[in-house]
Amino acid sequence: MELDWKKLLGYALLFWVIMFVVACIFVGFKVGDTMWAQIVMWIAAIIVIWLLAPLAGARDLQKGLIIGVVFVVVGLILDYIITVRFTGMEFFNSWELWTSYGLTIVVAAIRGSMAK
Image (tube, rainbow, N blue to C red; front, side, top):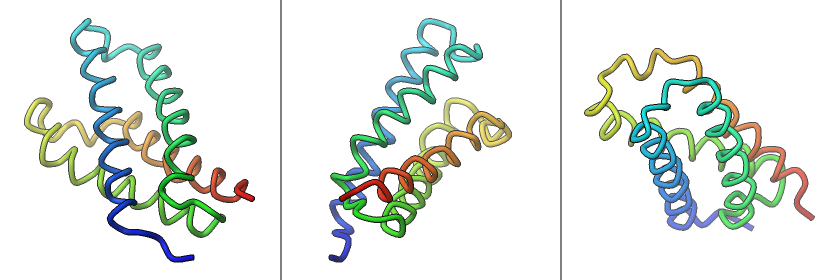
């Protein structure tokens, strides 16, 4: 079964919006730069990806990898267009950000490989 690209892009957008809102909450409480907030963000991302990947079409490892990469590409584009306006380009210098992008691909791939 082929991936439904409109649906996949919609779920990628939804993932980014959810994570953006969570990040804004932490920033609003002025704890966005703390390590515990980053860990909570990673846990939230894992849960959201785990729930969204099958809905986006993760039926095997290959589709899971594709979905993870699409989620990351959409995230990169939206972070460049929206997040950088608030943070500046140094946002992309954060190892925590790149770790979360890698985590997105790995979790989506694992979820796809577990689909029956």
